[in-house]
Image (cartoon, rainbow, N blue to C red):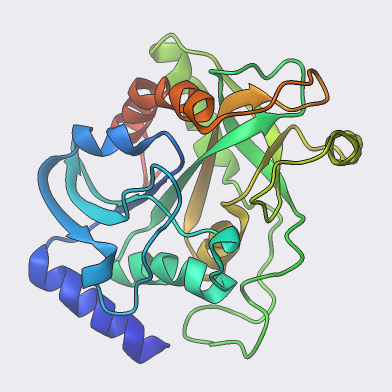
Amino acid sequence: MEDRIQQSVSYIRSRANIKQELGIVLGTGLNSLAERVKETVEIPYGEIPGFKVSTAPSHKGRLVIGRVGNKRVVMMQGRLHYYEGYSLPEITYPIRVLTALGINTLILTNAAGSLNPYLLPGDLVAINDHINFMGNNPLIGANEEQFGERFPSLHDTYDAELRGQLRQIADRNNFKLREGVYIAVTGPSFETRAECLMMRNWGADLVGMSTVPEVIAAIHGGLRVIGLSAVTNFTNIFHGAAHTQAEIQEQAAGNTAKLEAIIKEIELNS
């Protein structure tokens, strides 16, 4: 895998030869954040050696490289999902490439359903822990020591110091930022009411179909991680209506300005 990663890195650097410091993964409904990037270079995933192409609705499938404020960013405008038929190593391959590009911090965003009556559609929630309910782990198989140790610790997965900064940024910019536990499922079907009740009883506040494999690979590679969920709907614990992609994308998109403030103001080396 190391040779493939270096091929990906070489191609990306041939298109945008700047040293990135912050990696960002945009989830469902959050693609418009890429429009806030200045001095951009855009590279479709299909052009990058080793990358797979995103097939999920609203995921544009390209790297956007440039600046947000004074931050040098490399932004994934869309991600890969397990439900698309990709393996977890394929899903997390872009995270390995971002790590090799030299980022030190990774912000992962997603759209999520709420299992908690106090986390409302439209809210932005900082993930403080997760439950991996996908039945798989991207580190299964032979460990590649050049990427990380065999048994990485997830004791402070969502960096506590960075989460403290997020609360301060939210206060300065007059928006609410709650915290919660995210549970990852495979999808693509939405969860049953019984499944949602089970997950809430386990201590989960949010449910979605992504993020956790990428987080594990990022921690394995030594990155600091921020996880942010845009709450798009209440799960069917609270109602009996069917969810729609239009509803999910609309609710997620309302968090663009909040995410831009976070990217601009977060201090990466404190």
